[in-house]
Amino acid sequence: MDPITTSTLCIGGIGLASAAALAVAEKYLSVPQDPRIGKVTEMLPGANCGGCGYAGCADYARAIVADNAECNLCAPGGPACAQAIAAFLGRAAAAMERRVAIVLCCGDDTEALRRAAYNGIADCAAAQATAGGDKGCAYGCLGYGSCARVCPVNAIRIANGIAKVDKALCIACGKCVAACPRKLIKLVPAAAEIHVLCSSKDKGPAVKKVCGTGCIGCRICTKLADGAITMDGFLAVVDYAKPLTNEETVAKCPGHCIRKDAPPPTPNS
Amino acid sequence: MEYLLLIISAILVNNFVLSRFLGICPFLGVSKKISTALGMSGAVVFVITIASAVTWCLQTYLLVPLGLDKFLQTLSFILVIAALVQLIDIVMKRFAPPLHAALGIFLPLITTNCAVLGVAVLNMKEGYGFFKSVLFGFAAALGFALALLIFTGLREKIERAAPPRCFKGVAISLVTAGLLSLAFMGFSGLVK
Image (tube, rainbow over all chains, first blue to last red):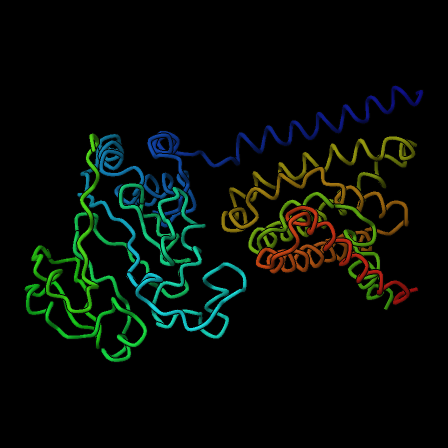
């Protein structure tokens, strides 16, 4: 046989054999995937933010269908998405509460001291690693925007040296919570409007020395809040499980660190 | 001793990425995060080791007897390796889901990588026996993994640094790769 025929037959034979092996394997060994997984994936927003705790929307859809995961974990999709999936799968839709991230510090550059001039990499973790950060307060927001950079929807702005979350844009994916080296960002119910915007656990005089708007641990708010604010050492902490509506807490706070959210802008204003 | 020399020379002296310049695309492509680099390394070690075994059999029992090994080697190797990896992918998905989840997308990605083909062709060129071929493939893949992981570590550090603006991104990565390659040149002469 001449080389042309041999090589053609040889390559053709190898190709055929491989194709046959693959076809057989595909037919007898492949793992059938539940068709509902694809449908549920389409219902999810497809942002792949990971806020639900799974690796992307497709993985979450798989978990919902196969592992019976709750279908109300998708923050960007919101209640509408949860209900649509629940209806599709014939499950009871669990109630879902919208949550937003909040930075628990209001000591901006006007109120809080900077104890050093930091010239390094503009990154909170790097600033924190450099002798504990340049902020006078060991608990305050450093304002180098590590949280803003990881935010998939650009909901975080740095204003006057501290980070602020735009409530309307936040999808509660939790990436900023993990990015903050000082653990200042928390996910709270979007309905809550009154917050203690301070995380300093120092005693009153120590707080006052470095910040004009810190919690000094006076306990006035705990008496007014009817159990919705508790003390963690020298720091007042809002218990978001209980309703907090008494606006006197905002007015009476001597540290001016209890703040009420600005009302959402109306469309015609 | 002979095997030890083979392993050391494949990992350090003739490192696939840094001395032979094979497998550059995954080296630059998936070296941004240690976790993805680890997945890629695992897949490469797995595929190269198995590919060395299969291509050796193909060469010895089919191509050489038919007198086709001079010109049909590359084509048939690519064909067989690609089919083989697809097959492994299917089988692994069925019988070893955790391993499949760990290697994931990287397995089909490296089917026709030049490092995989390079190992197979080099095995034939050096005339290694079956066991030696597989060992060489395994060691070469370990060398690839080593280079990839070192490079990824460097890139993660560079990400935090502030290089001059014109060097940012790919440029500084290529410079880093070059310097790393220079460092590995220091191993030449370790094994004669």
